[in-house]
Image (cartoon, rainbow, N blue to C red):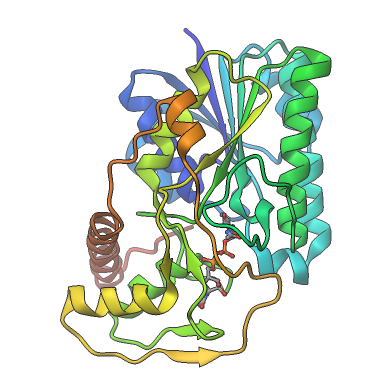
Length: 326
Ligand code: UD1
């Protein structure tokens, strides 16, 4: 049976993709070193997958797993713009060397198409919105530069080594299982847990920066489409929703949804931050059949419900003395 590899499959987007693939009846193998992902993200599907606790920096160990796979979804990365500024070495090693290793393993091992998780941070600040793939990249952080180089490597592997590749620039993906506990966590995971616990979030800067927040299931569907579409190898596509909301609008919306009033705190702007982000999805719709299904509010509702259930699960587990090992 054909094998589908997901690097970073224990992460937030990777574990959602694993579920999407399993729902299609595919045989799924995960490569993850659990640096930022968790085994618990795969809890109820663990019997249906093969889990390889491996680091993508270790070519010799990942190569045999990737060899011969039908599709490789390369989502393994050290995410976060600010983390890449504070700790550029590990993020370089994982995001650049690790990506090269995955592509090399796929090319040398005769694997099928690689779909790469690129980033909307590639654009930096542009004068024009929405952002289209024809704009020149303008990375403002090591993370953004690393993701742009990953795209270039994808297209060069397609040109020079005959490996099929597609790069998708993810635009601020959110949804269930996004880890809210780190200082580098995605802003919506932080906002939603603050909302449930009636705490004030800290907004970095004036809150007028905007993002194209994209619900995770719309992204996993697009990833699947990108893995099968004809005539797209070597190309880069936006994986966004096409809308944008400022952080102030977003926190207001969440308070209204819950019927509460919790003023946010404001802190200094974050280094490397992009001001506005909004995807032009024309090319993804035309070439890949992208069809986002979830409005921002619907995505927020689903994600909020998931965090609420998760907090209850954790409370029950701690009452019963069960330790949740991550
Ligand atoms: C960037 C990329 C995104 C990528 C992600 C990986 C852009 C436009 N987006 O996300 O494609 O997937 O890196 O990590 O570059 N913020 C607060 N308070 C908080 C946390 C964050 O105000 O507690 C602010 C940040 O300063 C930023 C915004 O919220 O302005 C979004 O931050 P975050 O969720 O970390 O994502 P990006 O850095 O935008």
